[in-house]
Image 1 (tube, rainbow, N blue to C red):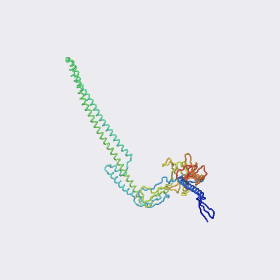
Image 2 (cartoon, rainbow, N blue to C red):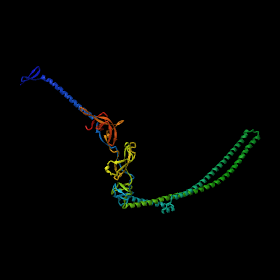
Image 3 (tube, one colour):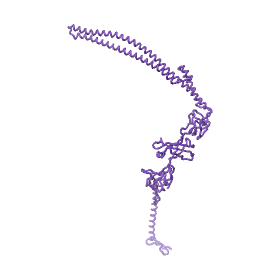
Image 4 (cartoon, rainbow, N blue to C red):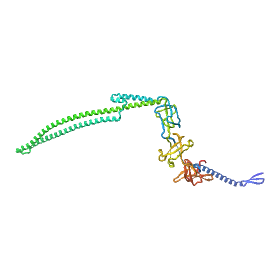
Length: 531
């Protein structure tokens, strides 16, 4: 039986006369529980916050892909792909438009000279029709020129008979008329100069007579002036002196008048002499110029005759050539076929049965027997430094070719697309399984070698003084492992397109960073892509 009673504000529970509990006894126990609960809650919150903070931080770290260093082989070979080209291939063409009725060969077939390549339909070509039309035009133009009325009879007869004057004969004919013309011109020039000389000389003498006459007139005028001046300068009473002075000036006038009369007579005589000489000189000049005109006419006639003859002979020969062309086209138009003009391997067949062929269109290509095949591709300068002319190359897909395959490096030249950074490798190809136009992949260089430490090329980084890798080191923490990027200097001893062999202070089983989503620095924490 249980009884409850209160004492001093405490509740006491009595069971069968024994005190079981009271509120005063329970109070201390409740404080401990509260402290414990608070501590647990605090730690839980801290754990949650720490977890989320680490999770958030992980998402901000660089994410990296890694690969473990391993033992493996490196094949430091240079690889490239090029198209096989034939040296001086023979392009098969036709000179007229035709239609293919059948194809007699396939690509890769070997043909001998005269083997049929294509069969053609028995149909007149457009070129044959055009050739006949051109012949009609040539013949019409030739006939119109021949009987134009400007062609000498001897030229017409010579051209129609098929004769052709040699250039040496033309040269002799031209020299003869040119010599006659030059001689006539020399005579005419000499006659003209004689007329000019006489005219100039006559004018000179006339001018001299005129000058003397004017001088005498001046002196007479001066004498008359002096005589009149005497009456003012002499003593009027000295009649003797005055008379003497006047007589002296009168004598001067008389002498001038006499000289003037003589000059007039001389002038008349000179005029008559010059006139006669000038008439004769002009007559000579006229005759010489007529001869010059005759020589020039003869020269022009000879030049025209030669030019006409040359033009007519050219027209006549063009008609002959056109007729020969028509005959050949007629021969090829009926029951014709296209035959191999050389022996070799047919590398291309560009037309099928039923297709049309245009004039001068390449319908097939033949790799001539004995001619080389080549292929080329570009490499870096560093790769080219490892090679030498004469090195042998191998096909990357060796199963595609027979045992007779041979590729030899024949030249190393600057690549025109990047002369400073690349070299163009050219190889001579020898194989019965290779045809021009085929794409072929080659490799050249050293054979594969095994190494203890091999990493992808993407793991190799280049510093200012050396090369290095970023190895991933693991560190334990209460919340898991942390990964740190650690720089390790390496020496690259061999490389190929994908892998590099290295030596370094490593155990050989570490993981190295190959790629990352952002730049990674040495000592920086990273997160792995597979976590």
